[in-house]
Image (cartoon, protein in one colour):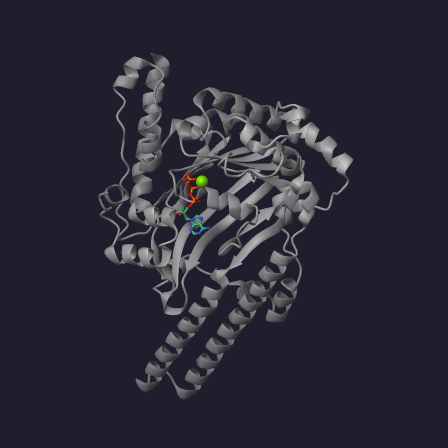
Length: 466
Ligand SMILES: Nc1ncnc2c1ncn2[C@@H]1O[C@H](COP(=O)(O)OP(=O)(O)OP(=O)(O)O)[C@@H](O)[C@H]1O
Ligand SMILES: [Mg+2]
């Protein structure tokens, strides 16, 4: 296979050494989809967004510390604005090896999005971009590296790497400041008295930042071990692979009721009733409960996977590519089933897919993900009206057209980040270009995209008038 030009040889060597067991990761590195690097390499890019100057707002440090003391973090504003799930600056890195040979793989870089009650939110991107990792982080299959996740206002997951880096950089900034002051004193730009005063202030400030960050790390650890189990059981996930995710040695009944048992519901008769109700909801019959997964077709197995999630009476469902592994003929059935369940049970959803055609009609909002980051986010209508990011355009160009005449002229756009963007001078930020429409871009790109919006509006007007 031809090597991707953007992948450096040392990365490939490193991935071979550390990941020789894990073929999929190695392939992703070869394809240039993920980067692995030494953990102690320059990490300033990880600490890009500036710290809030919390000390300025707090009347005193003690008061601030009191506020973050051992209690699970809760944000009323999410409840007030009907935000069911909020994912903030989520980072999920995987680490391999030890000591100087410790490597990190950034599966998810910096992902933020919010899902309102009753909303269906689509997460779309190519294989290996971190969609499943995002879903798995939400249901706490991983301890997240950095960022936070709130469900119903409660913080259900948080990582402390950002806070650890903040401590590291505070120390670096302090040393720099002290050196500058020493130089200024040597050059007699400041007096001895001024020097001592400023040194004292800088040290005190740094000490307070470190104290606060340490308290926050403690709180994150506390939150991680005190998450309400009942609250978590409201979030369920339908896994990507309907074949691998069902244990072949267990009957359908034991697969579906496993979650109930883990939650402490051990009444067999009650559980059986719930299993039957869940099977009926997904269009299967009671008799199937005693059978084993291999006796079923792909579509039926996916239904069993859905029943396993439904038995927990979820409020929020993560569907990880629920139809990708199925025959085209069965896909519509599963989509219809999910749609009915959404209405019937008032579910909110995170729907993961790798192409836009599936999510177009099913989701209210769509986030397009590339290489561990969200590059564009908007309502479905808005995204199809104003697709701006070159990667979104490339995904759109992959959708076959129903009309054979236009299909013949469809040109597949290939996305190559190195050609599409120049981030050497200014790094991109996630900006709101139209109300509710966000895009990862730097200022020259924002100007360019604004022009494109005008152009697209003109074209749409023409089409309507024709
Ligand atoms: N447990 C893990 N340990 C190490 N690396 C992992 C782990 N899980 C995922 N990765 C790597 O993280 C990256 C993102 O994987 P992820 O499964 O989230 O992608 P995806 O978008 O769901 O892809 P697909 O569409 O193929 O399901 C990949 O490079 C993958 O190899
Ligand atoms: Mg996946």
